[in-house]
Length: 347
Image 1 (cartoon, rainbow, N blue to C red):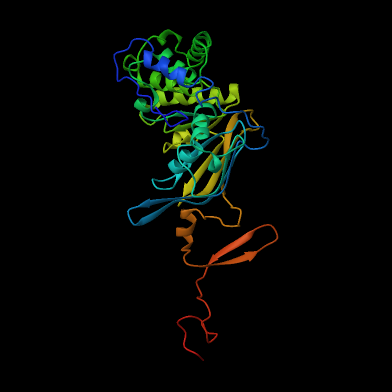
Image 2 (image 1 turned 30 degrees about the horizontal axis):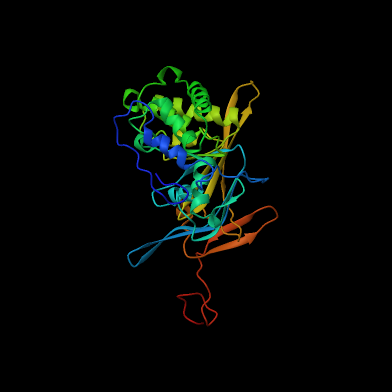
């Protein structure tokens, strides 16, 4: 476990029934005067997340892999959105940048007033502890197996230097919030998969973050349990006003949020907005409308199904109408240097 001054604190590999002495020593490392302190609050207004022309390039041997290609994204405070896309679309890279786990190569990313590209190692560590909460698909990344549910929730607060009494009170509140007060003294191996993910959600909320990032939080759960976990996330979003961004491949999950952002080739390509409506009989139903995303320089990605249906490739013809833009395939070819259509002999 790395602290703000770069020191590594080794956590024991197992066998402790309560918080081990080394964790108490870790708490001493985070007290004032040792270089670690909670991330200072930043005054900001407007969206919680703003990404502008975000670029991320990875070097693999002699190759450069462009994971993000000028991505734009805005997430308002209190929103609950899903990021979807095929493998390699850039969504996991985006999550890593928003979580302070990676840095953009170019562009601008701001979360809760924090400009991510300008944070040093110490500030980045404090940002990860206090501004964002994480829930991962794999239980091993969420919970320490030798700690009980309560102790796992107390750990982030311990590392922030919070008093023991306040830790216990906060942990018990969060256990009640996720419906696991009766499992406080159980270790992860004694909990079901759904219960483990609920404890992980409680851990992510321990230090009252501004943003919750969840990477496939229901990916290893059956359908019924996944529904329960997702219902908990919706309740947290509604009751606490917490902004939540979920990465998922599950269409059933993505349909339960108010906005689904689809990514393709390192950019946002489409957004699906959902709203509730009432018909003449008084029945409630959900209306979903899909939109193409227009970025800051006027680029948009047409849905792949539309491109294939019309045979669009290379270049297209555009026509500005009164209230829309028409797009047509270039079936007639283009004029060559002689003023003739490509492939035609001069007259």
